[in-house]
Image (cartoon, rainbow, N blue to C red):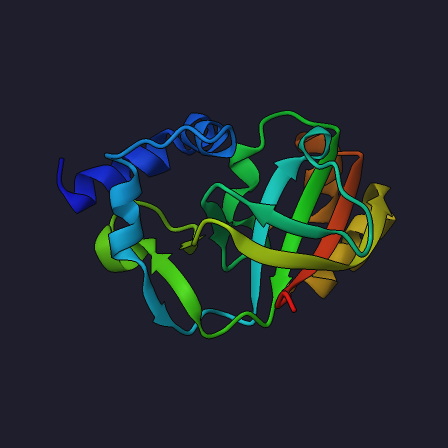
Amino acid sequence: MGELDVLQAYIKNSKPINDNLRKGVDIPEILILDELFTYGEVPKYLYRLLQNSEVKITGGDKIVDAAYLSCSSRFDGFIDRTGKVKHLACYRIEEVSPINRIIVNDYLPNQNDEGEIILQRNLPLQIVSIEVYNGVDDFERLLEEVECDSTGPKELYYVMGIEKINLYKLQLFAEK
């Protein structure tokens, strides 16, 4: 399996692959992805959307995920992947450039328009703050903060059925 095939397989099945990596199961054909990482710039903010039930962290916590972190350069980049959830979590990873990353469009330019960037496994992150947004009025403030103009607050609430969003602001931390 070539590098591009592995990248496509990861994009298509990232959740079960990452679940296995978190359990300590090495998947040799997927770990080929490690060879695609290059050191370079990324946008000031990267976004990762999750169901809030998947997040078990509090302010000040440090996170080191054994899985790859699929992020988007846009808040709404992965919004369609979250499915119908009432409580959404958003990691906003701030000021991490330069860093080892895979810019998916560099390898698969026609794959997606989500601005997908994959960050390395075991990346040390620390929560700087957590902000909670409830309902249409709060969502309007959130969308202004994340500079998202392609999705509206009413669409998030009424169409997508999202009632609450936790915004976790994260930064890299260096262990001493």
